[in-house]
Length: 265
Image (cartoon, rainbow, N blue to C red):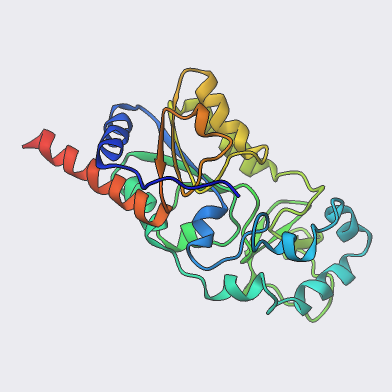
């Protein structure tokens, strides 16, 4: 397990705030570290679900396609397990709220999250791509349309799309399943414009999500990391803010707000 260092200093927070204010197009990339602070267990690492129970099959999407009825029966049966249970009760934490405030301030133009927990949406964030899907949604694998879970009847399994009668599956992206094209297009579009990425609660090692941040850096953009531990991306970052995202991100947002007020006075 990587070791954590002391929390980010006020000077580091201030430097990051200034860097964000100087940028032209800021996006964010978030990961499991943000979810953990809302009580959602991670998949990897100490205490992770995959660490405890083993990784799921790498051909999960192909298994779904081979027997979608059984896949839906398994999904329904798991509604209160160690993953689904916490998702049902989790609430956005201060880190989610801070990023939503940056969007409201007009500074954070887009957010790419690897989390499926819906918490960025619940915090009020609107300009985002959930690259691994959203556990509350159901997606048609034919036309790509998404539906709220409560809007789809499950008396007959597998359910079919009300729009095109295609096969429905949970929106969360299974192993072996391509990232939905509409989501991928959004990520490509906004990362191409970005000159600064806030990387929060993730080591940015899972692709394709990690690639968007690293591409910005390779083009001469800036990376600001907010993470409890040193990560594999730390060396590539211009500023690394150590500490829980629920503590660091609100401090960063407050510093940005104070700088803006000072410039206007």
